[in-house]
Image (cartoon, rainbow, N blue to C red; front, side, top):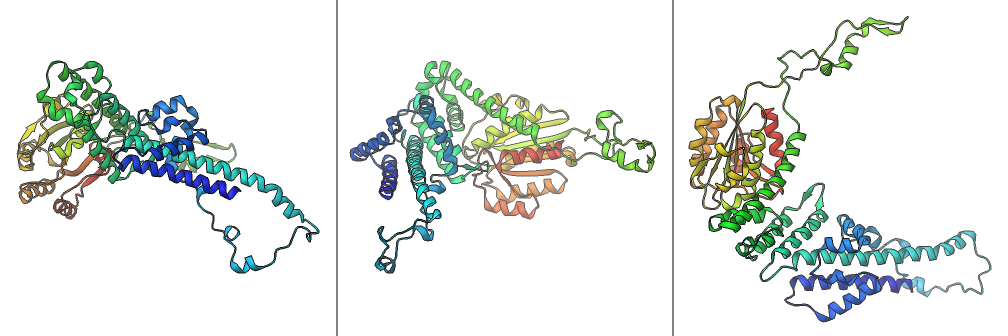
Amino acid sequence: MEHKKETGQNNERLLLYWRLMSSIFGSEKNPKLEKLSAEILKDAALPEILLSQDHSIDAIVQRYPELQETFDSLTDGIFSDDSKPNLTEENKEPTAEAQATPQMSLETETEIKPAEATETSEAPKQQEESANSGAKEVERAAVYSKMLVNVFAAVQHGTVTAGQYSQWNNDKKWLERAFTRNGEMDGGLQASLKEMEADIVKRMRLREVLADTRLAKKLTPSMALVEELLRDKSHLADVALKNAKDLIKRFIDQVAEVLKTQVAQSKVGKIDYSVPPKKVFRNLDLKRTIWKNLTNWDAKSERLYVENLYYKHTAKKNTPSRLIVVVDQSGSMVDSMVNCTILASIFAGLPKIDPHLIAYDTQAIDLTSWIHDPFEVLMRTQLGGGTDGTAAMEIAKPKVIDPSNTVVVWISDFYEWKAQELFNQFKALHESGVKFIPVGSVSSSNYQSVNPWFKQRFKEMSTPVISGKIDKLIVELKTFLA
């Protein structure tokens, strides 16, 4: 009986997943799957709202707080260990030989051993635990399906409203948390979500939304939205342009807050031991002081007489470091353009840093005058076009006055028109003593294509490409600049 119930729960789970596949890949709803799914949720005492694409996960969790734990548990995977079939000897199907062997009847049984009695008494408890586990897995299947349908099916076709886009963005955050392991998300999935978001933004009739302040306030700032706004800013005016600027500024402020924290928390460079330590109490090296004065220990009085005090070195470089950031502003590098513009403005606020910012596609522009205001920088960029790094190099090279005290950060996918000529200039910079850091991507994900020709030559030059999360670049910069 219990086995039949467990089989039924497994079938219910499979049916919910079949509905999931039908919702994502089917052109229209399957009435039979919808009806059976509704019956399954009703039997499991789950709200039928889980089948609706019109309700966000946030709204469901707010209305049904008991489902919060189940949504959060999706980070552990679709199935728990309890739901996996147990293939131990006790649970295997009986062999033909065992089936043929006569079984002892209840009439011939003269005594029940204590151990058997214990097992008999524990059986109902085990059956109850198994039933609870099966019911929980049905609930997990329902909320998992809800999350995937909301992200991959809810706004698949047609015009998208500002409200739908905002809801999709919030549901996408649940999916990203569920598929993030050790702080990182699969690059392929991240890229797919980015492509989906770009498609949704294009179907949103953004200009009409921006012209209505009430609708514009419903938009959730994101990288895809900022990219579209930057591409379309020359076609916006009046209220639409003002709302676009507000959205870009909100996104910049959000990213800047995160980056400021990362800059503050990352480790700094080496201490300059050539400078004598400042003899103040906060620099006192207590362990070294005790160790060096152990010969002055008086056993009779049990006191340590301190003859010399020792202090920690804390001095850093006093010479201003010149930071030159060169960013490829072609369409494929929008994440890097936004992140590095904000990062450059943060480092520009640090003492003893002389920052410069250059953006380029087929032409280059020196944005150093606006480096303290990332919003103004982005409003002056023009995304798209090809890439000619030699144009940016013509602006960057004259800025290198003291090579040993200069770092050049070059952010690009390095698909260049004049590859060999540009690489020769990179090599000359590196050999002159400049700290040269080539960066393939500066984004929230690890997914970015880098020209393998450049990648191999940078490796041979002992300046491998940093391609990954922005915190890697922050550590490199602080190590050199601190």
